[in-house]
Length: 107
Image (cartoon, rainbow, N blue to C red; front, side, top):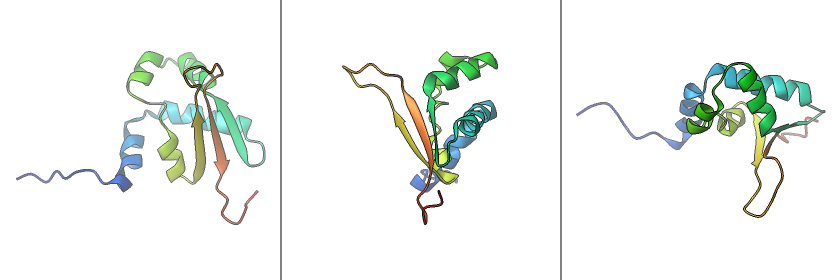
């Protein structure tokens, strides 16, 4: 028998982060820094995709490979991350909110 075992839930964020290209994290990091206002940064999904496209990333491939599913990696890095997209009868832009965790209210 081999040494392969089922992945643990605690390992998923790290494994997911390993398959997302650095350029995706660079884009998110840049937008977080530019939009951070005291305790949070709100980033529209189309801002991320526009920045990635400008840097040569194939957005269709990014969606197919779930490269924008960065929430787990940022949570592991200490962020509180929310993602919201419109439901069936709603019409607003999808967005991410990155905020400081409330450990002793650091903000």
